[in-house]
Amino acid sequence: MRCLCSVFDLSTQTLQTEKGVKAITLRWVRTWKLKEGKRVTKSRLVARGFQDSHDWSVLETYSGIADASLARVAFLWAISKGLQAAKMDVSTAFLQVPMKNAVWLRLPSNLPVEVYSSLHAGVFVLIQRAVYSLKDAPKVYTSYFKKKVSSLGWIEIAKSILVRKNKKGEIVALLVMHVDDLFIFSPSVDEDVKQIQELFDTDQPERIDNGELHSYVDMSIWMRPGNMLLDHSTYIEGMVKGVSEEVKKPLTEKDFLLPKTAETDMSLQEQQQKNVGCLGWAVKTQPSLSFLFSHLSRFNSRPSHESVLASEKALWHTFKTSRPLSLRCVPSLSVLLVWGDTYQLYKKEGRLGIENLMQLVDEGEFANLDEIGGLPTYTPIVRGGLLPPSGLSQPPASSDRAPFVPAEGPAHPTEKSPSPSDPSSFSSDLRSSASSHSRRRRCRRSRRSGHRKKVDIAAVPKFEGKQHIQEFADLWAPYIRVHLKRSNFDSDQEWYDNIILAFNHATNGNRQFKADIRKLRKGKKIPVEQIVDKLLEEYESALLAQQLAIRERVRHFPWDIQKRDGKGRVNYPKNTELSWPKIDNRLDHLTMDAGKIDMEVTVKEKKEMVI
Image (cartoon, rainbow, N blue to C red):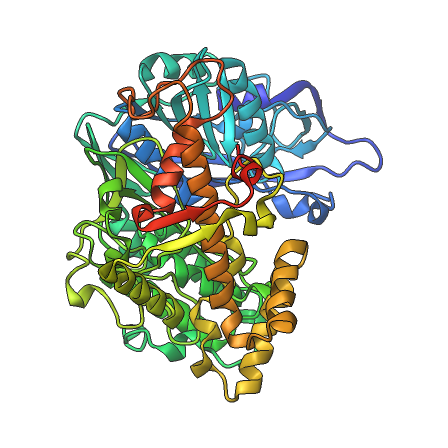
């Protein structure tokens, strides 16, 4: 009640408002809340938000939360750095934010005014701070919070993920927000918590790196040095209470490939959105469900009885397959592995038609990319959830073209589940395209026969004038996925038309790629179904030639690239403009078998153009 008095401008209390001014009425919301391990009552005086007359449809009013994948990566980084951790809750967060616009409220008649004698029941009063249930209150609060903590050095690098840097520009602390719930990682976390408490009123903060079980936004968290366990089991169990026997049946392809003629019933939209929302919340600790969540969310705007049943079966599937997510350190350098899948990009449906799945994997596990499916500790994102059915895109289990970049910090996520080498952990559907398989087979045959390939860098004009390593993975990714396989089309002509359609969309804004396709189709008369393989062969040769040119150039610099510091970075003069650690790491990954290839240079100047 005392905090309410700081919200109102008591001098404006009146029995009538000015003409043309409409006041918003209030109501009580009483709930139970778990606080410091005890169940306590909580009462809130909130505005009836539907009476807010502003046209909020043209404004952004929500409070954004951190992307689940980025939050997991951030947690992994913090674990790898051995940072201290604490959580805290900003008390009555919205009530701490100043209001810029004039908003009048009408106090309820049952207001306990005896707590504060200067306040009267049933009167109109002007507020000077945000109030719960005003539509823009969440957005106003998060913007205000980020602005205030920026004075302490906190900078937002992604939605609701903030970092603090030292004088050298190195990131030393991490703050993950979920509206008013804060998760802080820092070398001196108690000091950072104290600084934030000087700006905002907060509940008692808790250290969560002590090996005890803690709760954070419906998750149970257990944390020790080098380890973090995230568990959603209680929340997931609550999602499926009272479900019917029909919902408990296994998910099948029919649940995914819903008929386009299904009758839309907008009265089911609330239930559809609720189910998909629950599934999206579970994805935070069950990354294997990312595909399932993304696919079902496409039906939020056109719900049907079939889509609601599919979403309910997905929740039951989540309940039966969920397990705690374990984040742990590994003793060697980690690599950020990104599976990119342009799912029906040309339709621009669903989540803009793009799926990106990320993993941090031990560098040693990439010793043999051809056998990536059988890695001892490799955990595919799709395992533990339902694999995408035939006809829908899916992340490859084995690909010698998957783009990946080195990431600082030795950590990677795993789920407590059977070894991926266990046949039961994989489906035969989880495989790369036939062209990828044949290319790896030719590569292995080439290594066995001792065949050495020559690459002429003068024949790679597309790199002329470039000063960085050009990646073409984003150009060929749309064509190597399952949905462009011949078996998914009724005729060859329909297959060709879909490939050409994909080409047309990919060439938008990329003149070089468009010229390469035209050269193969019209110049060399290559059949349309073979163009992808030809492009891959040409681009991979170009990347290899460029890499070899850089490696040759590095050898002539006056420092030894074999001498590294404790973090594996090459020691080089301070005034050097080139980022040799990035180049060196990238080169190692791009040419695993560079020893089997000779480079033939006909134009010396082009050998140096990439530096």
